[in-house]
Image 1 (cartoon, rainbow over the protein chains, first blue to last red):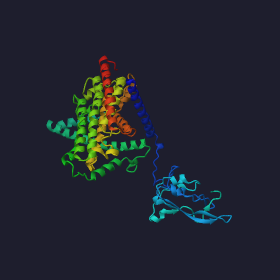
Image 2: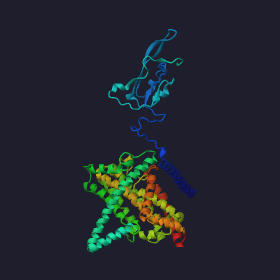
Image 3: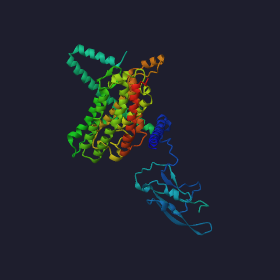
Image 4: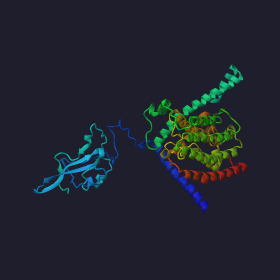
Length: 158
Length: 358
């Protein structure tokens, strides 16, 4: 019926508004929920959220080994050509030639931190770091090589 | 005992003993004007910092915290900045109307101060049609907004002004009808009469549910009338840059800004006067001891406390609800608020005739 629908509309509308007001009142009275970081002041104690995306890095273990196979999935996934994989040929234990990465070039100045390369990587070789103070005086410093010099691929990563 | 009315009376006696009656009247008028302007300045500073802090805490932010202790001087710094900025007048604008509009907004706000009772026996002008005067003058606000929008010669400004026109004209109705509910109960349009009728209990308690409905309608309608979110279609910064004050800068912009906050204060003061008993302390039936304790709190603190509570409620609305579309806005008024407040007024009238209230 029209009248019941009308009253129900009013009731539901008022109820949903009150739910919203309850939430904001909760935030208003609970100042511990405040998420603002007073950045330059708390620089030493700054804790960033877990999923904060600062820049792409390639983790190496203590034997200077990484997990990158050079499959170029990240290079293909990148929408603005931030990553470039440069290859070299290596001899493996049996003396066979094997393709490996020479340099994984990363252009921080082009990166939008979209996370697509990390999602595309099949061997979890790269990840997002939480560093964010990226300003430099020379633009060339923004072009980074992610793999350490002399590093090689971890055993067992294909 | 120290009170606003004592100060006013002593001042009046001293002035009448020192000067002749005409001179006394002129001096008192000037003093009242200066007091109102001073109150405006203070309200502007207090309400802006209050709004910024309230909004920050509701959005899990910190808000201004750099200028002064805990950022409390932020609005003072902002005012200084606005004072030294250039008030630009666009070339294509109608210069006279463009420069006049902010002052009209302020003058309307000033006129509305006249019938408000700030404390016991402390009122600029206790005219016998106080409530009617308030609703008549407050609808003049739309003139300044339309004037600003039209004379700016800017599409956004005009659009904002037109929306504001539609909005204020429609919401004036339900605001008026909910005010009428109190007038019907009291049987008087005079502000002091309305306050005295609430000596044994505020109307929101004495009038049962119909009065609560009237109060809620009143708050919604005045939120719309003062062009505040969720009804801030006249500004709508995401659609119309800044609506009717897109072209304004410097102190002329600040006047519009100030007028908005002063209007919020005024409508909340009127809401407090009509529904929450103005400067009347909170009394519960026959609890004499409790009532005596409540009487010790000065009447001005009661008035400002209630007013600032309502201001907080309106800010709470602003930082919780999303903005309405123009058709939703008009639907809300014409399909919901107006019929509800009309039926409500009918019930209130029946209650007043049958003496069903306390």
